Image 1 (cartoon, rainbow, N blue to C red):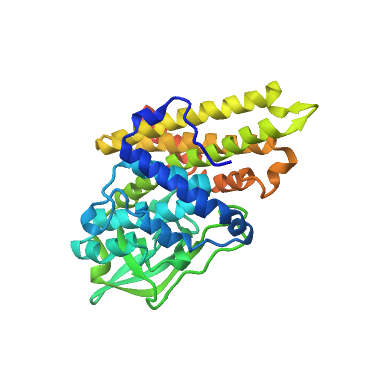
Image 2 (tube, rainbow, N blue to C red):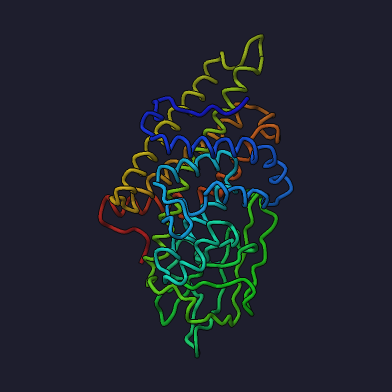
Length: 389
């Protein structure tokens, strides 16, 4: 049965015609192109690259960036709804689009030179180039300020040494936005595929985000030309601002995964017969469905308001932390409830719930763990940071 959407509070009435058209276009794309192939991709642990040019044709990369760079120039509601629908298909598909848009195109637009914008943004928008974002390190995840990747000034540029880990798209990327310390200050660099000393081995044997490319980035005396530094990016604030963009998309995406699990659960509850009647006739099952619907609706309202704040340039990073923290947590709860409601059938690839549940375990961790976002909110509430010395 085709997905009809989850809209208990008539949120469609708050959306413009353009916003609904974007949502419905991506929804149709997910139904026709993603869902028929994604279980196989997950089982066989590969990212379906055939989706990338199709996503580019739909304008899903750099949706909110200016049209003069070949991007969409759309508002943040449109972007959020697109991420919601992509993650309804799979977290790996949404992750690809999030990284390309929020973690590669955004920093090049925000912190890059005009020459860098002209060189990369149109190509990334058309998916003629693929990007990745290198911040997390093997020993520094929640504490990016402790990074040990370094850049050293040499004639005509910089010498980069270090390693990054858990990098989406790393092994297939044509350009990596890499953060390193130069004279003790965090700076951004564009590291291009094929540069001597740069390797990006894929990380295998994952139980989560299997339909996604996850990689290490290794830099051994990589020579970076002067023109590949992002001139406007100075200090930790720059990469953290990129994470704010990505976390915003994740807040929407998690609702998409929750919708998929809820929709599957409603269909299953109304068709699965036990004790002579559909299991949806039993009170415990109805309680699970009521909980799912309630939390999805609350998450939708959070996202819509967050988008409006973002479009009005009133958004604070802590507000994004609240939405990412809440929406991913409730999506994972919903996925677990859906798995339980489906019984043994819930672990099979016939239903999407176990795949979403496994993916959401990673989504809860990346772009700031649940606990880190808790501390971000705690510091904002009390004025007292609790991150340590």
